Image: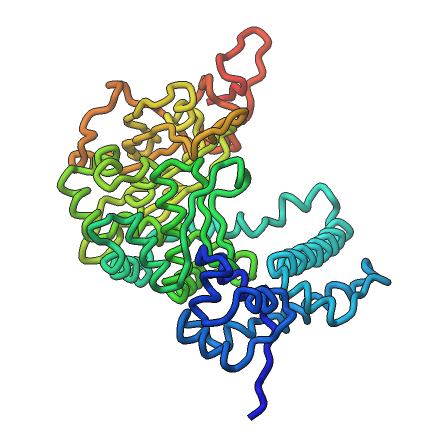
Length: 471
């Protein structure tokens, strides 16, 4: 029988280095000479049937893995170099195949760059059409981006996904062991997907929190992250590998259709799943009830950050084991809203979260302190707010860790079920949904005039408010 010849030198070399083996050690295991293995890795000798069988027996490598997927990459590269931008630069098929086989990361990088380039051209074309039809001044106001659509969809619905949450609870039972969650997730990735986890210093990976290299089958996580954020990053990748179908089903429940929107909401679901793995539902809900929703104590109990625990409190919507209906607001130092979520949806009409008098906007001036307040929005709407400043990751030299202010919101009628039975300050803070809808006069924190009141323009008297109006 004629031998089938496969040239797969670069794949053999990558596999050998992923096992931290030198050529001598692998050659001995395969019962061949190191010089012959060297020729194989340089594609100067083919893989014979006998050698393929030895690789399968010793290292459990299948012929399909050795043949790889270079053909599809070559097809993609041919389309890239057929672009008019690269006219005259079309390489031969052999050269394309050599790039795809010997440098797969480079080949995939080229494909991603070209896909991004084509996507940008499409967006510019669409934008030009909008400008021509509606005028430049109206485009930004009338057409929201994908992330705006995703945020709006997530704000309006309960932040609980039953099927995904239960799948996370089941997976967590498989992962948890005597070695803890971090080691358990590493063992699970290695055992189920042959993926090794490696911490990298910030100078090696300055721009990424984590990155998966599918060719070397290694997951790199930056050591600039705090311990809790490292676990979150690892748990997100575990969810992406182990719960892919569940993530897709949960993403579809958000009711979004466009590819960019679905991709963004899928990443949100991966973060949701990460927190569900770190804080399994039943255990977290029972602990939260027992310690009366003490957020800092919950964070310490589950070895997570204040933000992680606060986020998880907004997901306790299981029918047979409900938690308190918390809402969550996260803002950055510029006051931009990053997350608005809730067990029953974010209470935009009653609470809003856009008033500058709220503690969440004052956290940046009082670093590290937990702020607990009663807020009165009028019309019998009162809430308890719990706010704290947190930092994402550790700062490297010459950089600053990003700061976020996190605030939990709970209807005031439920405060007796929490440890926050009295506010830090006995005074109730009077706030509005936002400045445009607030009719409280003489507010020093007002930055917009109300929509429903005419301005009071009196040169003889000036209010403490930048926008005085007729009551």
